[in-house]
Length: 143
Image 1 (tube, rainbow, N blue to C red):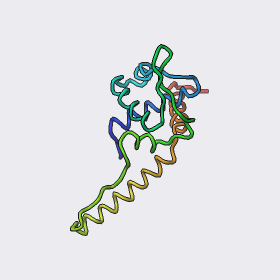
Image 2 (cartoon, rainbow, N blue to C red):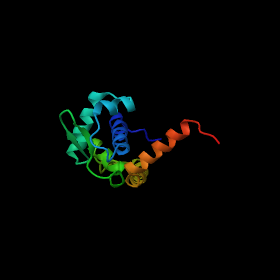
Image 3 (cartoon, one colour):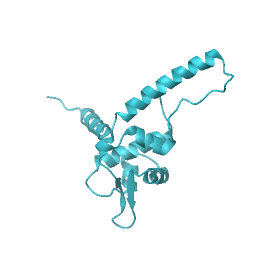
Image 4 (cartoon, rainbow, N blue to C red):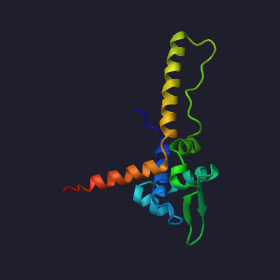
């Protein structure tokens, strides 16, 4: 199972929260930190990377906060993760690598491409929809 780094996980949580609030104006970082139980200082660092990548805009001042620069259906999980962690790749091998090392490298390359395809095909809107469905399920509604 791919776990990912704290930076990637927290960044996706931050972006899903912004997707849930899309169209309602800037969201306070403190509110996101509280709702998602994340450290506010770390979120501010992540926002810097996401802003540099053009995925969020940040407004200072009393009515400030942050919001997505595009509709959640037009931002993929891959864009978010690569903005925070750089391009996902399987790495390279030295020219003198053994056949076994090359075979394993091919496996990692295929699995990395499969993961990239899933992340590329998953938008923030998809994640926000799933978040809401899980929230409803956890409330134990029954007929």
